[in-house]
Image 1: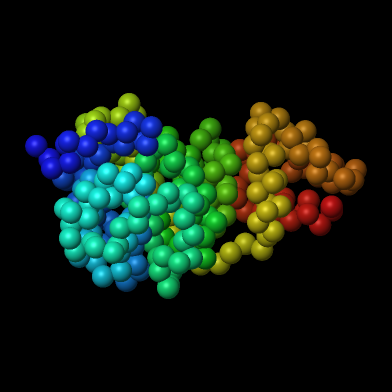
Image 2: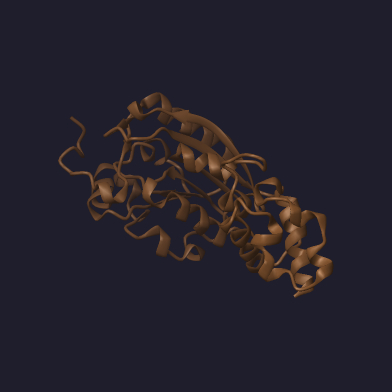
Length: 259
């Protein structure tokens, strides 16, 4: 029996712990191959299945919301003393975690996986790399390209700053307890060159466009169309899922200049 079996899992925190050693090692090797010398921040380590592989890294910290598992990790891995933060990641100021840029990694809790992405976007200048396991549906949406049904708000808002790649599936049987869904591992790497845009205005345009995704942009974005000249542009005959990230950037810049 695993040493943490006496700790009852909290379904409200999305606790499903990865037990498959082959999958764990595959994720570990992926992290080692991608992060180089970047410090690591592991989010939601739970009982430390992945932490057991990463614990010897010099620049490595963990954020665990559940006090029971934060205390368990400190006992199970004495070498992590002072590196375990019993905090809510979504409320944490990431500026003070390391004194340099760092990677975020983890088998992320399903219930906050999308929020973890948006948190990383808020700190994009400090987070050049993110490697994690999500519910497959969420990971596929993040990595989706234009023209697909999965392509949406989180796809565009992530890919405008990061190159994304869906890597592999993780079956339900790899977890204890097995979740109801298949999981997937994906990678986000910060783009070498940013688009020229106003992030807050861009976000407003993207969210408004996809708020009525079955309508043409002429209808969904009508509150942004201040002139007849704008309304007559061909791009507004399209639906939001037809536009690439670069096209959304161009659209946002056109609309902002017309305000």
